[in-house]
Length: 389
Ligand SMILES: [Zn+2]
Image (cartoon, rainbow, N blue to C red):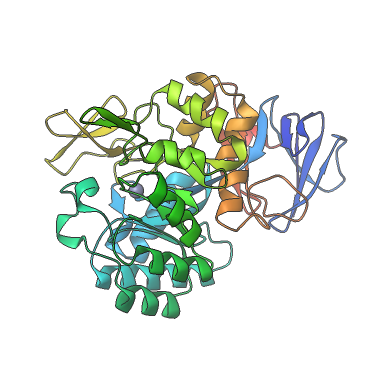
């Protein structure tokens, strides 16, 4: 079926296009044109003067709707994906937090299966840990933490095809061998939960670590040891021009000033917005079933309210925060939630921008950056009939 979206500001690679239209056919973008004349036979969608932008690519996300990807079931994967899809995440790379090797294998098998399905929102798997520095990973996954083990990661990557990203602490013994192996197998390899300083970060980059997970979180910045000062991981990552970063832009994990600084120094093409969402994200009306946590100020905290436990953000909220709190232009914030993560995760041939031939993953956003309409592979999965002519 031919669909034509008209009467909106369309985000193109040349900037905003007004009075144009987006034509969709067979789940793909047929054309983005500067004409809004009705095409014969097309179903017309009226964007009512709102913004028409590419669907968001969610590359670091643990759960939602009360479920977590480490449940390693098809039901959990699908429920979480659907919950985040309503908030604009038309592409999702599920993240497994540190767990047992058996669970990693089971989740990878579920994900491999999903990738076989046509028009899957889920496009590959992301593993965080369990090869993490205990000093920086806290007690959260204490029992699972270990050094990189080639007897695990090599067979896992050889048998499962879905793994697209893997984050570990680069200072662990065996971490460089890990990064050589993963990066040469097309897996985005990221530093996370680390206390590495410049020489270690530089060596890690050369070994294959090209991305920094939840930048500023679980890594030190500039600090003093006795009377002398040292760069932290943060400054080291800034100094490596080609290292990409991601920020949890929920407005809580990082202040707006820091979001602005990352935008200014790393820029749109090297910065992604991520939710790093826990199971309580996109959980409208759901009750917290774990006494260790409370939800307060739009974030999940430990029950004593003294430290953050994780994010409950959705992709739309990240873009909102960047625009409304950090003062970043909407077009740039959207690109950091779509085009840049699509490129870094290697799906930019199909995802991340409104271009002829790409999957018709399209959002309509209102002036307050609320998602009003979601198209996934050309099908309207969220929106109102009043938009259909
Ligand atoms: Zn995470």
